[in-house]
Image (cartoon, rainbow, N blue to C red; front, side, top):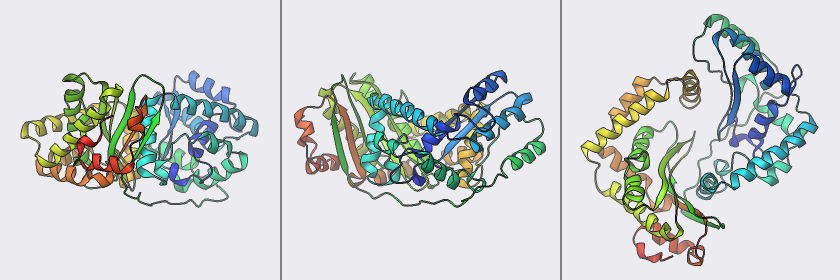
Length: 404
């Protein structure tokens, strides 16, 4: 359980880089041996880094569970971190950063996070930067691993057809008995400051990609599923308000959606669209008016019922795979210290009222909590907007101040 919160100030991207290095070889297996052994078992092995945890996982048939688990724990615990491999992998991650920056419909979300969260660690990109990547060396990465890759900071989640559960638990306990020199780790619970901000980046591409949103709620906040429902109504499906008004009714965008991001001590609410530069300001106006509509007018009973059924269906269908259950149990344990049941979530969804949704909209869609970011062929007028002009725009009291 390690992410951006624990990374040294000068080594942003360390958790993600260590994820890469774990697959470069161990004391028992070379990188090629790891992949060949997994392929021979008909298994799939991978990892991913989020802003608050790193997940190493393997998907395998039941009869190969023990062998695949030995490989997974081996690369997690015993990676050799060879200096030559570190320098080579830095080039690989640098290209990953470049690829990401060349994909504006993805990159804009990191720009939005860093803009609205400022200096808070959650505002950093998971991949780090070319500058922070250069600071990573064998000494730094070994110290980082010794601090955070230890049994006290490890959560194991297993789902699927388990032949012998008692035997599996015993084996996992054996794997988790490894010792480290420095088993302490930093906890980080700073809540981001609330501030309205804006950032525009000029780039010679076809579309303007923008995010407009606000600071949201933490993962364990009692209004978690109310905000999720609000996001679904606004831009969570093809029948959502923004999809219908921006794409279907006006043809302004191919991709437009909203989503809520939940973290341990913070959260974000984001609307994204990729749009022609001439439609940027009209689209922003329309989205802000939809925010205001949710604050002023309760959602109708029919729309509320539709979105409840949509969320329940999405929840059940998303858990059809054992890998989904593995992730469900892991995240639930991290953020709630227990495993939430599907029935609990359904009950929480069913309990939401139209008054709840209106209250959440009024709490979240406040101008001082909001930010707007954009990348693309922006006009000089837009690039020259100052914060005061944008504040007036976000407040909604002077929607005509933007004429770009």
